[in-house]
Length: 276
Image 1: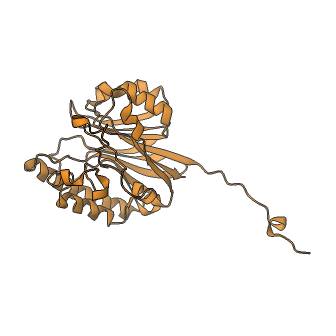
Image 2 (image 1 turned 90 degrees about the vertical axis):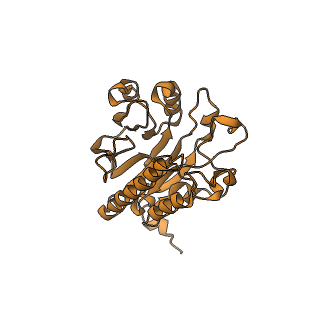
């Protein structure tokens, strides 16, 4: 008589716990709070990384999001920039500002360690746009050099980590509907893309491209010239995962339909799921 392995070895059921982490450039918390609440209720991310909150810390509507079950950490700036982390898990080791230039007063970086079943270092950024070319582009490139150093530190720590947000970088021609229109733009200049690639080459994974192929995937459509109606978009919002974080990745998507809602941001959310 043939005996099957299942007849003699117990079959264990393992529960998979998925953590959903989203990034969303909301283009102003004051203007976008109702839309953000609707999206949070629909999408139900465990962690939401926000960019361009355009608010000082004291003016951020904390209670509104605490009522939804989120812990809040912000690094704000009046009328410009600003980043925030909303997490249903406890947060510790909060760090505001990208290291490497104490004179930099722009609120573009916040990081924290999420205390879940395993710890994950979450870094939220709003990378400089760099336009018009000149001093603003020089600042962008210098900021990316500092980002490279911080990314290298994260890998050396061997902590499960990710860097996510609005990178203001179009990595490849397939990431723009009309790449020829961006040839002389800071988002697509060869030097910008080379610095982005340098960070990837440290060992980080572009989560979206690990899960999705081909053209037509965008996270930003300009308000001008009917870009949304013509689907003239670009992919500039990214999740970069350390190798041990990449091992946990199960999915990455862009919620492009959010762009068609009332009073939308010019960006839409991108999210990943991690098997933690």
